[in-house]
Amino acid sequence: MLNQEEKARYSRHLMLDDVGEEGQEKIKNASVLIIGCGALGTPNALYLAGAGIGKIGLVDDDVVDVSNLHRQVMYRTSDIGISKALSAKNAILSLNPNVEVEIYQTRFELENAFDLIGGYDFVIDASDNFVTKFLVNQACVLSNKPYAHAGIVRYMGQAMTYYPDSACLGCLFPSPPKDASLYKMGLFGSITGILGSIQACEALKFFTGVGIPLINALLNVEISSMTFRKLKIAKNPECPVCGKNASKVLTALSCNS
View 1 (spheres, rainbow, N blue to C red):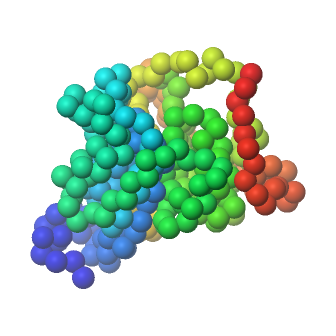
View 2: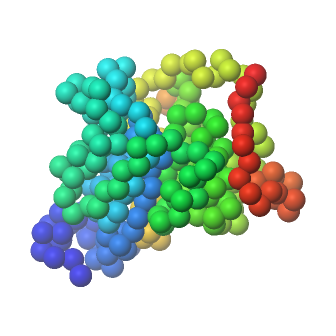
């Protein structure tokens, strides 16, 4: 049951017929792991905490740098030099003290992937590198764990959601790109808020059953022309991650050119 403070805090959700108190209870009992507390992770954390997700896990081994502040909206100049995971936890609790927050000051790697995602209902891939993104996809597919993917380069972004038995990231991209120049591109700061908010929407839709999830589809966002395109994608029977001959164990990946 929601108490009076919670009913006031989440009143705009309760007004929605397809969320209501029952949907808000589902959100309250839900847990989400956010992998990466940077440009995508911070809007996710703020919106999910604001929405009342019961437990949020934060995975990041980095500290706040001055160059982060133009896009990582959770941090302030006073946070420079402080652990991102710890700063993010403090910001979440300042916004909503009802949320339980667990921090993991580590990288998401082959050795800890299953342990990290195992205790959560939904995963947000807010990482900033291709190797981690492909590893998150592998781990979630092998664990039958739903997750929301997003990636950004320059003025462009993409998002998709994986549910067990839907198309996964590997159905589209069998392996990480080898072009090292992709790691050196800048990005337009505010696009990260758009893509991060889309991921947060997908998590909340998963728990409440609202709308149609972004599964078997890829949403492309190009903000210089403000173009949004949603492409249908199909599960690939030859996918190296979820296909009929896919490996049943996590596989080390490389983006070396």
